[in-house]
Length: 414
Ligand code: HAM
Image (cartoon, rainbow, N blue to C red; front, side, top):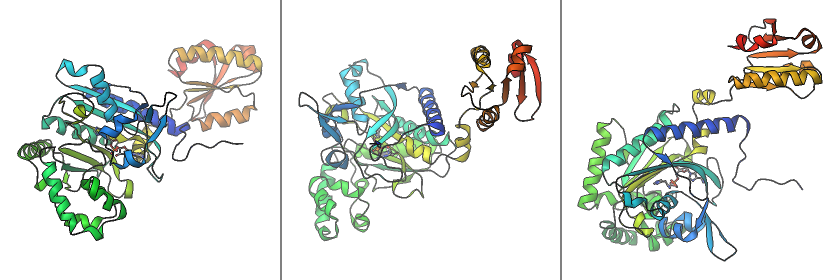
């Protein structure tokens, strides 16, 4: 039996893997330039962590979690997102005691049992940052700026920042009541899922892709923010304007996770269809409390790496492509192989990218492989070369060819 990978997952290798690694390294670099340090948390956590924070009524928790029982019967879940695990770790390791701000970034796999389609997978990868410890709207602005920089640095254009405030536990209960009352008049127009949502978590109706017309008739949270949320939202907008960051206010943007308070945002690539959110984030000032800690304000975002890679502009695609070998050794005979490996070793220690064709195939075939790999030079080692203790080096671009001493190779390459 030939096995197949699970539905909604991918194998990464070849050019894609090279680009993937390049993207990860540039993202880590970007995060460090903003003062973030890396955090790695387990791939699985106690299910309760996500139930309590992402929310029981959310699609992620109610439909999409990969949950299993371990041998002691404890419910564990492959992490569907990483904000709650980072907060869990922050509190568990006592980092809240040091005061001030903690800035973490992460890159890694997340798991959601969703219907796979273009840009949507069951195992996908996120680059994310979490800025923990400040409620200053300037931090919101910095995080939004950084999320844009993720895409700008790869040459993306025409992105849209969609921005909203989803309020806080002070203003939300009253809004919820207003919303529930308004929904009374539109019961028959709601889809099946939203009829249920209306009872459990009515704000989630704003996330529905089907109930477009009803949504337009409903009251919006931004008209019902408490004084502090309103002030925070206005300050954030002012800072964004000062930083020349364009944004579009979208009072229907609620995001699919329950922990958000105040700022919610997404980076959209118009024209991408259903999966047009490249990145999403927001403030989660109540999450620490939901995780058993005190009041620790925080904000962050996550970018889907698959969506980044799949929409990468041409220039970045080329820049992040595989490196061409400096030298490709084309070898005839066993003695030739040992000699090539010795010479290659010396060159690699000097920093050159060297491939030895050890397949033992005909020289012509080896030559073809060297040219397909885009090697700058090929070096022939055959009987003739061994006898003369010289090698023949060929410039693959000009076709120019000459004999050089084995010791003189590095000099020529330089
Ligand atoms: P999220 O909006 O659920 O937020 O996911 C963030 C990004 O992950 C999405 O914009 C998308 O690029 C990518 N993504 C999500 N689901 C999939 C999927 N099934 N396949 C491929 N890509 C996907 C969060 O996860 C929050 N933890 C973000 C955050 C961090 N909020 C505060 N800090």
